[in-house]
Length: 116
Length: 114
Picture 1 (cartoon, chains in turn green, cyan):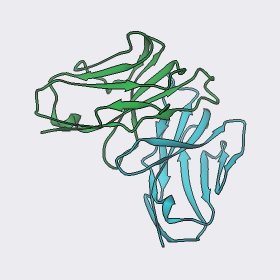
Picture 2 (cartoon, rainbow over the protein chains, first blue to last red; picture 1 turned 60 degrees about the horizontal axis):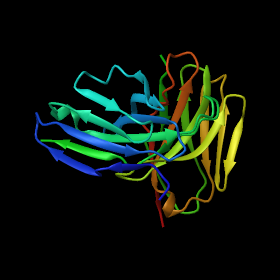
Picture 3 (cartoon, each protein chain N blue to C red; picture 1 turned 135 degrees about the horizontal axis):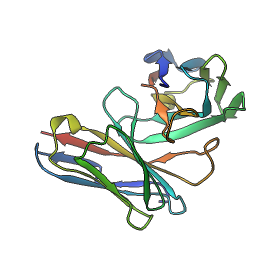
């Protein structure tokens, strides 16, 4: 499978616990994005990496959230002290450096987080 | 601030009908507009990307148009099939906003009955 891979597919956790998600982008893609989607809404941007550098973070990304892409390949998104409002689908996408006009994003299947 | 709106929120049609999904955006300063498909509980699949200098793109039974000056795009699906049932999302890449993030609409959920 040469697509974007996310693990786990589903995560159920209790409020206050920490969770970590992993994303493996398409191998030749140097851009990696994290989005969050709640039911009935479109995805909302969280953060973006170009290679290993985290170039942009949304105001949605509170200090409980941290993302890394240590070697410019896979990425992890950690949420500390989870809250019920964190329940959502967390989507990862990757792209090659094609310029803003024709950059196409390829999305993974997402990690569905439920905070009880 | 760029906002993207999709109308209708939901649409039900019988198999074989041609249909149009609408997307509007508030700021015409965009690099491109993309249409995605999302199946329940799944990620997004890119369908079509229209650069700001283009007027339309076609892929199989799908045709997307872009009228940047009026802030509108349409996705035309010809001869709909039950397998087309999904949520269709429109997204723009703003030119004037800081950052590179796509701004998404809430989507149109399409149901095609056999």
